[in-house]
Image (cartoon, rainbow, N blue to C red; front, side):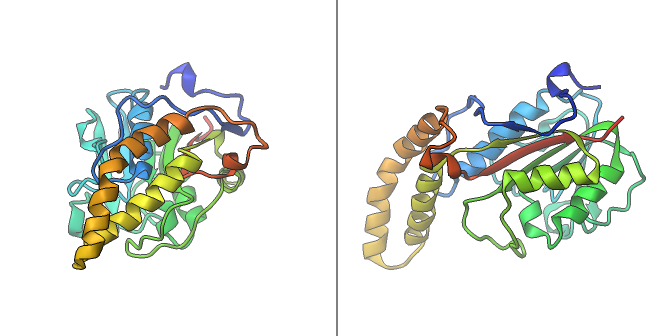
Length: 252
């Protein structure tokens, strides 16, 4: 079903290479670099998905999209699953207990969802259940990113955690990739604080936010460029990332 670029030997693989951005990061103060990396990851992953695939978007929205990637533009069948009806979901359900038959989807997407659930393992196990043999999991999860309740925020996990959990559940062809490094983390921290200043009624904070905002567009593009360069494993900056992109397959 999928091209050979998706196939590995079944071992856990860590992809330390960074994807080449096809679009520059947004200059808007309310759009994070984390969102830029998530959008780029999904955009490139969806280029590999056949047009007739059936996709479960866990935690997905049909309205109030947060970034430039819109899963609604995909030509196949996309089923959005969410615990709330506020965003036009097709199925209102907990991601760990989805009322769908076994092996009923070609792809399961978990985009910035797993940090908001009490047990990511239960959600991933449910994703494995509803995937067809050979089906793909596409997931993103933040790491060095501010706490953001939606409605709650429970955890940050390393790439090694995701590899271990997915392998134990029975997934194969597991790959993780870091999404931005030190400079992206730093710029996102500045952007987040400045954005809060911009929303403040205090004129002094608004003035400071306006000054910083002028340089943020340059800072975002520069951070993406600098973070795309390979780093040696012992480099201090190698331990920083906004989060991880994760792919895995159901055996079959």
